[in-house]
Length: 77
Image 1 (cartoon, rainbow, N blue to C red):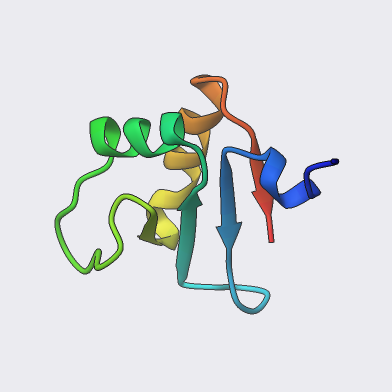
Image 2: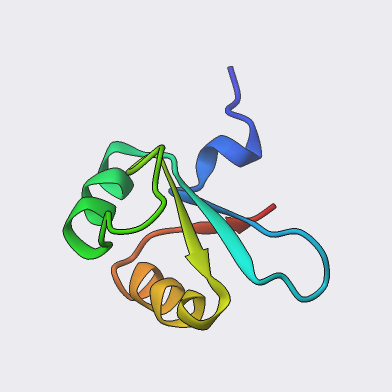
């Protein structure tokens, strides 16, 4: 059995439109969820934390850099 391509990534980044102001980030693996709990604040509107987190556009670059620097894989959906 072959895994779907989307299941192979640790994180998935969702955005709407060409210039979104809010992103959704899905932590897909247990390791990714653990990283979120250690590095991302639960403060604000985070109803599905740590499975999904919402990020304003001004913070997305630093967050993605941290994810990539930690060795995780990322898919933009």
